[in-house]
Image (tube, rainbow, N blue to C red; front, side, top):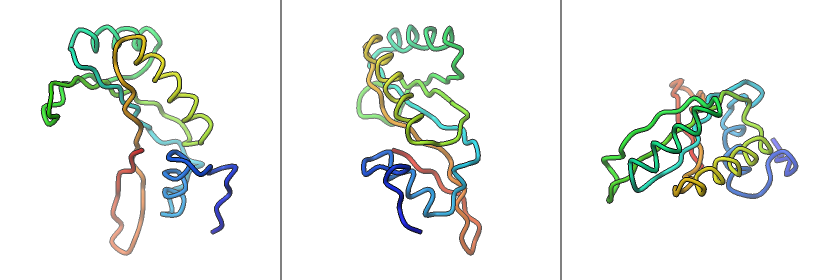
Amino acid sequence: MTRDFKQFPDDENGNVLWQMAEDGDDLTEAHEIEFSIAFQTQEQAEKCALYLLKEEQKISLFEDEEADTVEWIITIYVYMEPEYSDIVDLEEWFGSIAEQHGGEYDGWGCMAYVYDDEDLEGEIRS
């Protein structure tokens, strides 16, 4: 398969999507994509969580106990076809929301259904 750089630009998002396609993941099927925002305080995270809920976003909020410092993570779940331009638009929007609430946008990921001889599932993150 030859890479179409209009569909899969040469950057982090394009590379992840290209890898998913190369691994056999059907990108024309909707996936639940998880976008993450990190906060240093629970108060900041809760304010942002309320804002996202008012924007009718499906979210989860938790304290990341594995981080070196105290960190609160909001995960936003968006059910969509993993298309480059849509992912970039959502990253910009969630990045702006993170900045407005004192947080930091932390990337996206989704379950990729990659089948090999043993029919294993994998997770892809950007």
